[in-house]
Image (cartoon, rainbow, N blue to C red):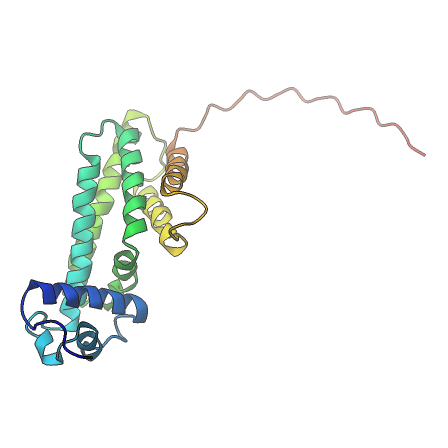
Length: 216
């Protein structure tokens, strides 16, 4: 490939990151080589080292930036929300809409977590835990207020995040439902799942069996 981008500067680094994101998403971290990456960007392999030291550094930076942005935008989405139900609705709406628009980043952050070296793995897990704790705090507040009925907050936290993130496997833009409809469907699923159970209705008196009539 002809060289199209200079070897220095933020534009080249951004091009490297975008190319790396696409190649890892399409082929996997293990299959992507620095030679492939350099060819995709249009620079010599040696020029990559002006911007990244290793392939592992690139993967870590991509995943770390993704989770940091996820946290930053979640905090903005929760700003000013009052009460656990309003906060939970905001969490669901944010998580679903974010994951609709960041499919590559989400896929890599989940599927390539195993490819991170131990120190990098621990750093990402800590960030992910911080995100999970935002939801756990909302559920805990709701249980304390009597707004939610949750048997185990940690289990509910993992289950809700798994449910919401699952749309990455099937969502396609331009499908049968609008984004708003998909968000509303997930809000209903989550809110109904944590809502206090209605009081059990009094048992009805057993009805007398109907008299059977013989037929011929």
